[in-house]
Length: 201
Image (cartoon, rainbow, N blue to C red):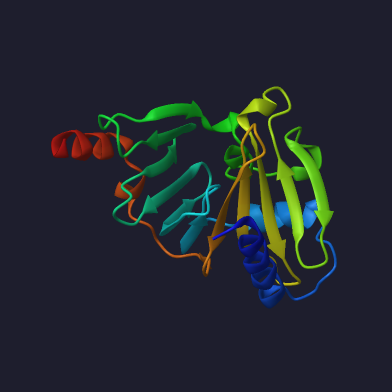
């Protein structure tokens, strides 16, 4: 799929899911995130080269998120204990680790979200269909930027885009984010994942 087709598809998606509400304030977005305890959804991911992946996402605030990719992709992204762990399907079963609070995801997974006073909020605008929140570490812009898309008036987080240092973007679309419900603790057990992956290898 070429870049034009991807853009057209995303525009159609945004128009079909938007309630054409006004711009949501940072205070409203903070309240929405602070009220989120658990959430889950299937997702599809559009990569910079036009390829696609699918999977499931699990969120347990504060501080926990899991991206499970569907086969044949065996990648896993897992955040727990202020560490973002990325398991490479081509690796040795050991993850690459990064401080969660230094990433855009860390901002929305924080125990108390206060977007009005967060240094990492570098943009906040309305494109006519969604309120877009841009998050980036100002001390390390080379680590990329994430744009979160919220629709209203009943606030819903339905997608985000990750931009790398070169400006290439990877888009995550949440198919139907369901709030609430109980998530099993094993979903966020890094040691268990390491053991299972090293045993498979």
